[in-house]
Image 1 (tube, rainbow over the protein chains, first blue to last red):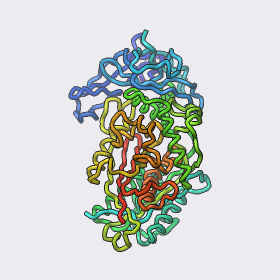
Image 2: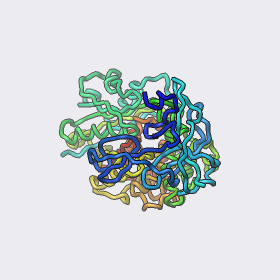
Image 3: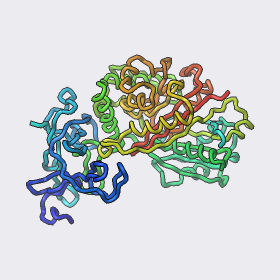
Image 4: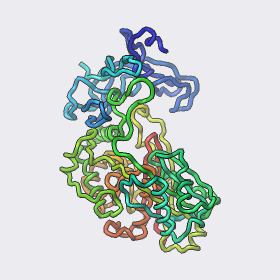
Length: 143
Length: 380
């Protein structure tokens, strides 16, 4: 059981979201010291260049640019639609996919490379079987 | 090394057959391909079987339990949507290696309805609709929007792919659908994941296709009049690219496979008379015009606008109706597209015949990712 669960606070939606339940949540990348490739989640070998044991954790930026997107109108039962599925290139490296919120899901409102920021919040009320709540990350248009 | 020939090839009409088992569907196609080759199951030295849904359930052996348990070696394989092409290629390789002279390859799939894919799963809470979407329509929409970002490709241009392929399928009695879908119908259909509407998503169908592959020696024995030569067979996996973790890259893997295939065949894209490529979504077809070198980078939108890939155009693409309208039974697709190209090279494609077709290409993508490409040539 993770530290967060023991303390009864929210759990991270993915294991590369760190600091869940604190006032300083952030996304963690793992960067290859040999080629610079940035991964999400821990690993020992780089799939870009094959280097071993040169991967180190790095705190990912909370700002980035919209690289690509789709507006999802049909998903699995129980998933609220429409919403924007966004691919964001973070400043300083790393690409993350997530929901882009606080903007109408209409292609007319979206521009490639528009600046976005990473924000953290409750995972849309979703809970696991044990009733734990989760903290997730989202993107919103940069102010 | 011997050249390899397709002596027999066929597919069942794609549809929904909930009362039929997977091995029964595969057996139907296998018997049709054997008949097409004028051979019997006793003539086969090995069976290469592709299926995804029952990948651990010995589908190849169960096909032989339907049509003849002759004791031959059976390989069952799964490789996402490249499964059929992988089975065909393993059959090809066994002849290339000099192990076999006559082998059977079968691809078969029974599909449910509904969305494929989905983000996350595993531990914790569902990630779909929380960390974006992992549904296939969305993944391929995002890949299409990457093309829009680079070249300004429009929703309308993507939609035109679907208009074209649905039109082609009206000429193919083995396609799931034979229905014209004009541009306004495609664009006004239910939006699934922008810019892919429902009519821009491949159709989940049940299907099976099979091929008999033989060595050059055997082909000459049997007669070359309807034989088709396999000029290239290539399988590639996805190289590392910067956005791999969030965006499966179907472009880089296709470019690797295409380059190898052209080199192996000693031809270029300008030599092709028709192409069956992996139009799992309308957005994907646009990407692959460029990935396969059918046009220069950035020219795919113009290519669809000018009708160059329609039947009668410069390089007809997916004259079968493609996955968008012929249907996409995952494990069968990579052999069904070989059936389509062979049928044209044999001059037997009736109303949809690409006139004078001598050289054709098939292409599939299995997300995750695999790319299978075959180049096929008319012999007689």
